Image (spheres, helix red, strand yellow):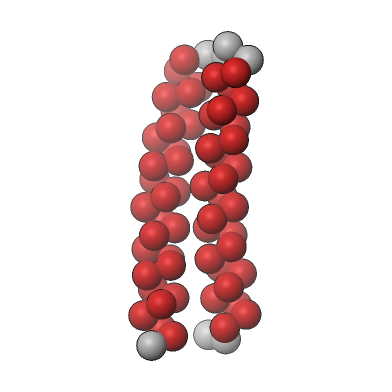
Length: 63
């Protein structure tokens, strides 16, 4: 795997977390559904776990 490919994979994982985070923040600021906020929080935690695994995997492959 080339360095640029791994950079894009890490970027995609990080952006996925950011999109869900900002979606949850927007929902909270607008006074949206509490169930949606809870679902988005669960998605964010799961995506953060995946992002950490991806970052650790890329670091391991580069060493």
